[in-house]
Image (cartoon, rainbow, N blue to C red; front, side, top):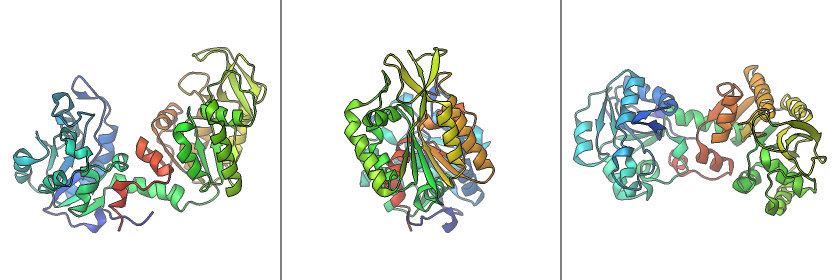
Length: 397
């Protein structure tokens, strides 16, 4: 990854600073129910305000499909932002045109404003240059603080950054620095945990990682597909039988690249997937025909914990088992907690991301104990795939 521009290169005093954030937050009855995404942008917004900028927040919310639908207004989000900042946030009921311009022109240095949902205009998702020019009329500079949108070539993410000077905000900067440290120029040995249900959704991730990491730990139902591809009986476990050739190709590519693929050696099995279902532990290869693999077993947990002690860098995407239901959360919990302990002791750089991963780490009680946990689902996966993200490319020096 090339060097990228940050707020440090700007003199923002008296300038209109458009800050592209991802405030696509959960809502219920017109109220924000989870302010995590808002909270994570506060350092950027406060720093710009303290430096005398006119801080103009822009975002999308939901999928209004290019129409001005009241249920997708950002007004309640602006109210939640004001509460988080302990400062007034003026809201413009449009993101371009006279309404937006009027609000921006009335701002004082250090003040905050938020413009209406960008996706009320179909041009936003089409990366329309003319729409970007309309947005640019209300900004002297763009601060991009939405890594979770960086994989989308949308007008406020990509086209706008080509019209006015653009830099990474503190949240974007932290994300890029963490990802660069984990996969760009990592300290070896490097390992990646890749779990989840389907190999088909992560073929590109696996294909990229085998040439970048020293060990690739496969967990979740995805491991069943690999075991099946090796001729191991997996009973009635969830498995993509039609992906056996793809799994073998990945194993072959890993061998050529000198990457060790780590699969479970034992498994927790049950006849049905429900909380409290009677479960037993069996060696891999001895799964009864009427049972399904739902978690890694204690021998596998011990093996992974031992391996963790030898790593310098760890990437994590996806759970090791069906962590949502007890007792099938034991494997993910134990290994995540050991990774967190090593991170706390300064022995491991740990970077995790993906929706299920965030939930699994939170469930294990270590959601805030990794070096960095990315909440950017699609962007994080595309980065793992080795793709160039449009919203990052425009920030490179």
